[in-house]
Length: 140
Image (cartoon, rainbow, N blue to C red; front, side, top):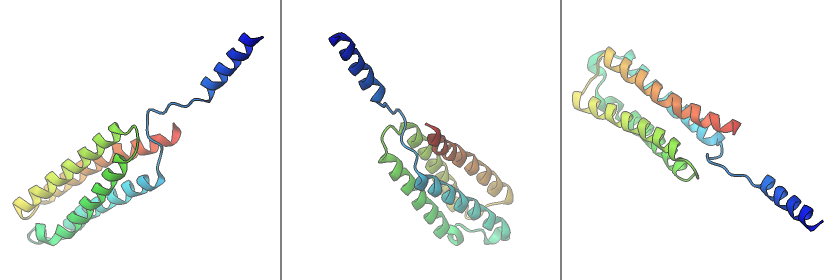
């Protein structure tokens, strides 16, 4: 009888345990990812609306700064989450490329239609896995 009781207690204890290898889903982080991706898209679309001579880095420096601040906030929120190394790698990829494109714009002073379209497409490609990873946490 004691063995059955002990076995039942052990099975119940294991059944009650929950091991999580991924962070919990966050509506706030998902919203911030979507909003920052939209700001990035808006930056490049606004550039395309202007003649090339008016697409100076200086004309868009505030937008670049705002987007980088938002990316840093997403990074900080992800650093505070447990079991989050994969998400941090994706955020780093987004930030590294955004900063690279910002630096190139600053050095070149202005961007052509083709450069803007390529940067926009690449940034959408970098945001997508981050959003998909966050949304994937809903189903865990």
